[in-house]
Amino acid sequence: VVGSPVVLTGSGFTGTTAVSFNATAAVTFTVNSNTQITATVPVAATTGKISVTNAAGSALSAADFTVIVTPAITSFAPASEVVGSPVVLTGSGFTGTTAVSFNATAAVTFNVDSNTQITATVPVAATTGKIGVTNAAGSALSATDFTVIVAPAITSFAPASEVVGSPVVLTGSGFAGTTAVSFNATAAVTFNVDSNTQITATVPVAATTGKIGVTNAAGSALSATDFTVIVAPAITSFA
Image (cartoon, rainbow, N blue to C red; front, side, top):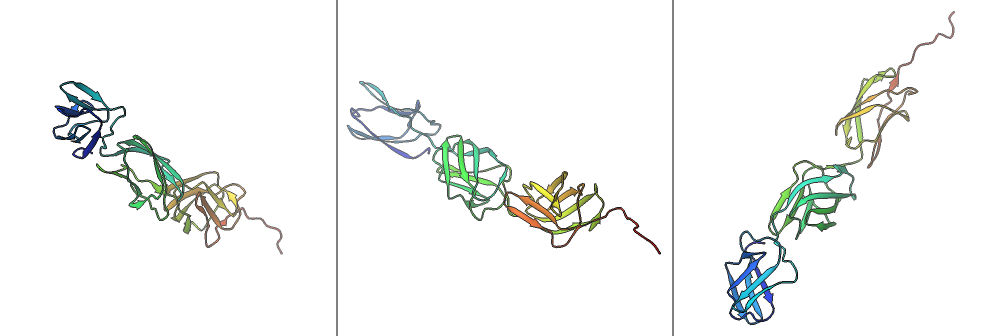
């Protein structure tokens, strides 16, 4: 990072008059010997070659020196996943990343693919919230929340009985990422995840009285009580 010391090794350093980082002059440097210089990374330095100049000429490093800057997260994908799944972060300043977190829970496994991309695994105990990236220059949080998909739970539904084609509102938790809703094992063709705690589902054709089910990538849940499908009456006899 800017302000840190960098030790250069080489030859012909006696009489050095300038050291630069990608053409930005180092204000502070010390010629320790003819084969070593200690230079401080200057303000405004960017990633690139280090150069040394004396009265006889100049030399450039063969490899680039990377200036670590404060990271920034511009996006991540997918927007929701289960524990143990990979998430790709896009941004800048990822070089030198020392930590990635999901709502303050450290990701045990992550890889800095490049200065603009990190692949991190959603850690055990992660909860919904901001994703964080940290390096020696600072930290950054995502602008939006990453949703950790957990197994759903249905606490109630209303109304308790209805006809085919009518809406039913389910209340519970872990509804984010719901992939299926069923009425006594008959799939609801139409449903909407209103929030992590509410789903509105339409009673499907062929539904029968029984438990309502909700499924996502983390698991499934059934309602504690039966939902009653109201069907047309039929008179079989009278006396």
